[in-house]
Length: 356
Ligand SMILES: Cc1cc2nc3c(=O)[nH]c(=O)nc-3n(C[C@H](O)[C@H](O)[C@H](O)COP(=O)(O)O)c2cc1C
Image 1 (cartoon, helix red, strand yellow):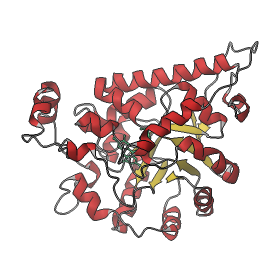
Image 2: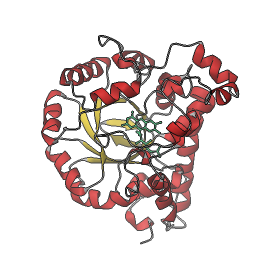
Image 3: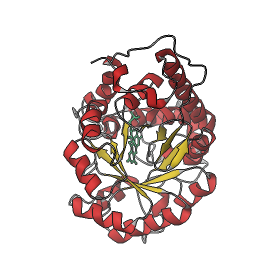
């Protein structure tokens, strides 16, 4: 049930599959007899010099996937690899604890809660803790319909009942870790009076469906660091983000977990690049599984890709080492792809390497 929560998407999971399929369908064009003795994957993203154009996407309640390791393991691995880490507002580790775990570049993801005081407070905490950027996720006015979860009788935190008992008993190590560590909770909101019960109840109560462009301007005024808007798919919306003062437009369909049959994000990249390139950095996520996918996204105009499930699988399998291994696989694949393409620097990756 935990695997399905990570792996699954909304409804028929068409977007989930399409995100990756559309990378695979694109063919690469390579050059030969180029000097590729030195491959440079470094980039500057939102003011941070990083070793590769890969960002750790924000994902909720990572301790659910590895109760002992959780978010700190991911943040440390990202720092070790010289990459940007993003923390979810619904992380199971608090902003302050995470900031202590990693001196590396880090962004904090937020939703626009109904309680604007809470939004203001969390932005302030993120700033004080040393997060340099805010990511506002805007593709979640309502929760997506992820059918694997009710089928598995899955909840956060997981409850053991007759339906889940057999799965739980088949994983005694996981069960022990879950039982012998603090409960998996939305760690940034434990101070709220009455406490936060289940994360799902909290989201239901706090998601503001009336959020509109004017709220973006309100947030931009409050935050002096870098500001990214995540979940954008349309060129007009990208334009509106730039007008509202966003430094980055983050193209995402939430990894196929929200609107099913939504377009694959790689297909949305070029029209958005055409519209706002030079005025905002463009980040794309969804379905990046190979170094060649990263090369294609950069070639089509992205400044960086973000990854969700690939590092979560690493985390679930082997904590910090697992995340590190996932990052190592992706970065070494990117280097190999660039060598085989005859393109030693990221700037050499242009749309000419992708067959029309
Ligand atoms: C288990 C899980 C939890 C997620 N939680 C959040 C979240 O709290 N906030 C957010 O903005 N995006 C969240 N996302 C979406 C990711 O940030 C990202 O957009 C997506 O995972 C990218 O697709 P990929 O998994 O194919 O790489 C979540 C994704 C997964 C798989």
